[in-house]
Length: 317
Image 1 (cartoon, rainbow, N blue to C red):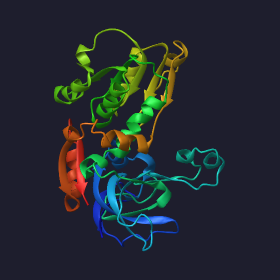
Image 2: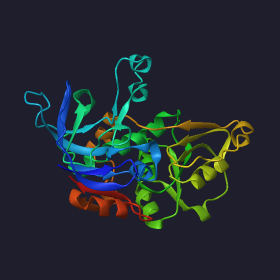
Image 3: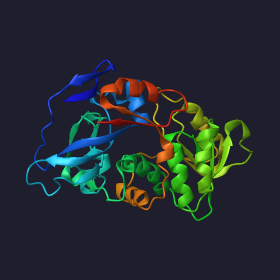
Image 4: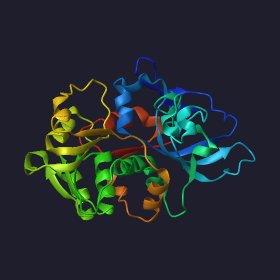
């Protein structure tokens, strides 16, 4: 099968690979659509030193093994593959398993291929009314919902979201649906306009009015975004950090210690609630899609996704 493969030198190529075989308790999934994520682009710059088939946002159909109760079902999947035996798994923190593997990110092949395997326990059935182009957003929408789980937000709490890219927009949509008072700051007028129908107040960075916030969500994928978040969080407030950087961030600890600010990391989130939001038609996923490419043009797709201002790029696998 043809797959988009990241080598040890971080060079990506289209390779012919054997079709994967599911292990005990696993399903073989025929990938329909996969989404290119900011994390995929960070991997190309050296994040996690990953080697293998890229991609972790996907929707597909279970194609095996014969006799599986999942056979023929349309699915998305939890991307973290846990051992089930370590102390964290036994406490229910399977996403933080001591030996976890993460499809397309850490020690396990991902979704930029016609087939991938996952434990059946990781699968979620896609409701009939959720089209593939919506279902492929389940994992990033779940990551957006995780930002809401990081702190308790009373209704109408003012929240600043930094970054108007793919994830920042999804976070602003989800926060607005939870009845927070959402302000979104970014660099692209056309991106910001996508959040306005949700009641989000939007600002170009140069136009952001003075003031501070009890909660700031940093989703810009740039160190300057964290600078802005720390500058705009109020004393004893919280910065929820969604971005990952390849290079170390030069954090001045006084920016946390003196104002007694909490800096919270936030990664994966709840897939079930994300699917339910998509099933209710509450997320404008179509507006977030920039282009679709066949897998055979995967290298061009990755180049396109790295252009400034590009939103979601999909691969037809």
